[in-house]
Length: 159
Ligand code: HEC
Image (tube, rainbow, N blue to C red; front, top):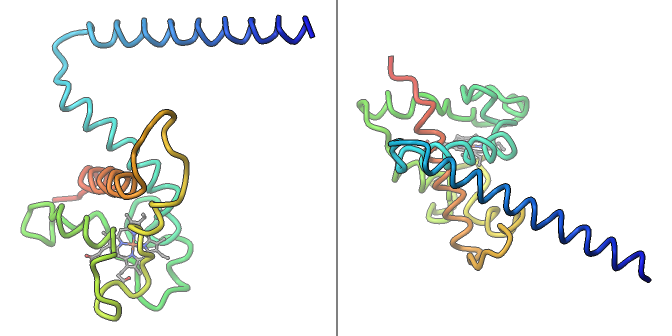
């Protein structure tokens, strides 16, 4: 028993240490200079969107988002080239429209996406909730879609 308690204490100590290190890193980072925090936040969201893309979208849309994922040839409709959304919208990234297409729940069946999964439903239940978060399933789905949309915005080819 005693041994177990010792281990518990040790783990607690390690956890406390880790938290202190994190706090210190955060303090250093936040003191690091005049970096625009809005830009940093966006970069973080884009990075998270990129991870989500690699898990959920890459098989159809491809590593470079050109619509040539490994599953693409099995589909009756070719996955959209997701790097040309801005170019095809007169140079402005159509964020609202992309958000709606990815969410998919507003689309009337038969008129919307034919092969694209309805991500607004999927993201309500998939993956893990951030620890200690009281985010609802709906908030979570919207957040993941927003991160994806920011990621897609970041990979547009406008030349
Ligand atoms: C099973 C294959 C498949 C997967 C997985 C997939 N897509 Fe698609 N996606 C498609 C196809 C096919 C289209 C073309 C439209 C259709 O479905 O009729 C499309 C279209 C789109 C469009 C363009 C919609 C429009 O307005 O023209 C966006 C944006 C998009 N997908 C984003 C995503 C994102 C983000 C993910 C990952 C969360 C994803 N897709 C995962 C197959 C897929």
